[in-house]
Length: 112
Length: 113
Picture 1 (cartoon, rainbow over the protein chains, first blue to last red):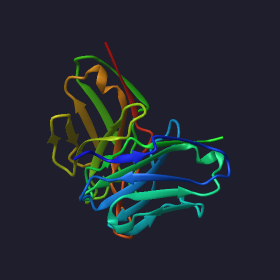
Picture 2: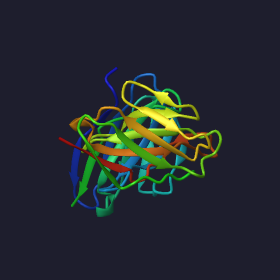
Picture 3: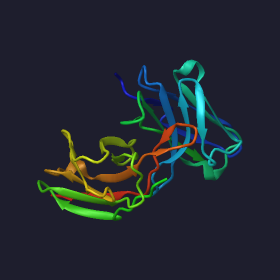
Picture 4: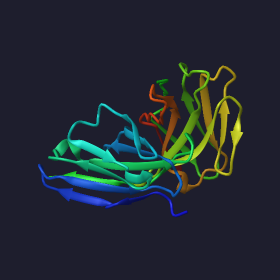
């Protein structure tokens, strides 16, 4: 059990560029969550997968955001045409059941 | 979603018990209370959760009032490494049947030497 792994840890991108983040959950965890956290705030829910099915999307997840979880294993979160307001920490969590979620260390995105 | 209210910040002396309160007066009968903490620049870490009975594990104790409208997280012997933001969360269930955690701003606990 190596925990939830997120890559990259840091990403700096220019406004308007596309970025993609990857999350590798704990093996056999069928639930996977994405959250976003801005400075001084708690994490905000973005989306949730059970296996490969995306079951819930927050209104925060605009049409520039897309998440996938092919084959129910790792997940990717893509942001197209990044804006400065997208600068945040993007957190991934996984769980085998709907309790005791394990979070990764996050990907810190800076849009310049 | 049931809302939670926590103090913005608290201080505790090293070696003493830290008691972190949380109000969740609109909690539903089947909603659990979760506690997570987040140390600077890391992802949130699960501490403990409960439904209506008091719970204890190697990290902390959770005391839930009989009416379930409030709870207290107890760190029995706080250390400097317990300095973190502590989140009290009531787990929501969306119409799609998924479960998400709704975080507030939490309590910034500072353990002083």
